[in-house]
Image 1: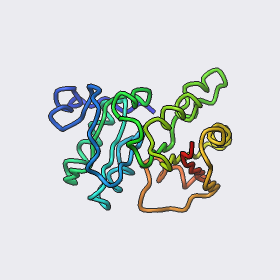
Image 2: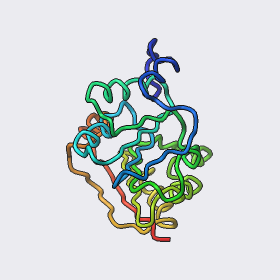
Image 3: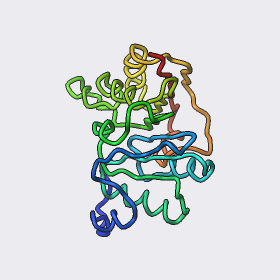
Length: 200
């Protein structure tokens, strides 16, 4: 869902708030663990994790500058020095990260693109899964969560051909780490999750 326009969400202001938008390979070698959320929304999930694990690095990718502004506000308010915000699309991740540098990738409530002719736009489409495998470390984890059952079933099928599936959860319990969208949607039905490990 497209966010309401925020007047202050200019490239100049976002840059002054620490948001990155020009692709550059990031040096993440000093961190024991690197987490990447693709499609971070307003940032509740990633900022909650960053707050609780200050010695690990967290990276939020969002392609909507209005949403990035909301994440940046949270980062500043919470004083999260271990959070990077990238204003970019998922397709560019190999322009930001060296091979095998990410420990875990989160895909939370991505657009399901339900029409068959649009399936190639899904963030779980096989072409994207190959990109994730490039930047994930060996034994790195991909975690996908959604409230859309058909999208989940299709994505599980994609993942089985690219990752070793370690967990399929058809009713994710409430936790301290939920997106704003999940908080709202879990009142209406089940939340589905799958985890896969890069083994090849």
